[in-house]
Length: 345
Ligand code: SAH
Image 1 (cartoon, rainbow, N blue to C red):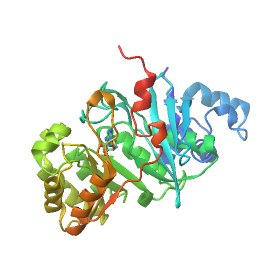
Image 2 (cartoon, protein in one colour):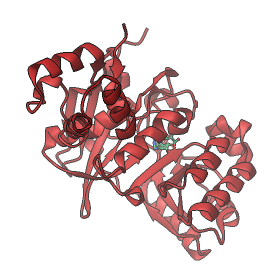
Image 3 (tube, rainbow, N blue to C red):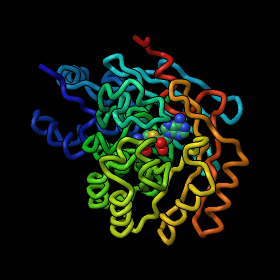
Image 4 (tube, rainbow, N blue to C red):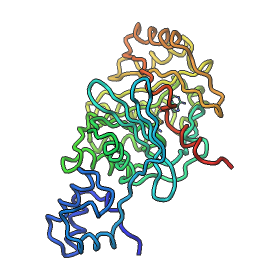
């Protein structure tokens, strides 16, 4: 018999399952607290449950947790990068960053990725599998437990494409923002996508109020398709229509990520094209010099080039900031640690 992944059940689902086993309702609350508030990773920790009940749980359920395989701490800014080992031996990465307003975790949504972006380390071996809601939640719980902190912000900007793992991403978003769990405000959660257009409409219709972050990286289809194959399926015009729909239906400002790659998308002309595209939209642009990944051959830009690019956007009234680089000494951008940890065939 396969055991049920208990930490992927939301409170209602867990309550129903517990009732169906003939157990009193308050047990569901106790178990949910242990997993989602106290970060328990085994039934043995649930000391207010009888030994018999713990055995019964053990026989029927499994808690998928994230085990720390490697942990790197930046000596510049205390950014922590984790390589987590999953129950089947796969690896994923998460990064915890400390800001004035609290701790932000960047979580992965898949092992590897199928999107094929030209500059990205996570996609090099393709998608191995998608994560369950419990494995996405587990990254937050494991980091909190290890660091003894409370995480206040979550960005889905780690390995994988969250909207290519839509159901589990949605379950994760509901559970992490639920008051019965960590109760992280939807406003403090960002979902980043390379542009899976139909799922952007779906996410808007959920009206969760999470921040949508679009990895744009180029303002014309030719360049964008070169950097991001997903653009061939859903070109910029269709993507922006979906973004407008998201803004109209949620009232939320959308973020655009723009990773600068030397000679690919970093010219003044590129900046002007971006202005023309985004002018008047309720949005914000994050400029990021590309993190060089050896296999991709993409070259980064220097700080002055980023500032010049930003200046053009600001002059045209497009809100733009330069992403502060954190964890520069620990390869904090995702995908690189996992790659270096697995044997390449
Ligand atoms: N698949 C999602 C989320 C994961 S990637 C997405 O595409 O948005 C998170 C962000 O990191 C994306 O904006 C992605 O384009 C960017 N990124 C990937 N590799 C990078 C690199 N080498 N340097 C800088 N940014 C990178």
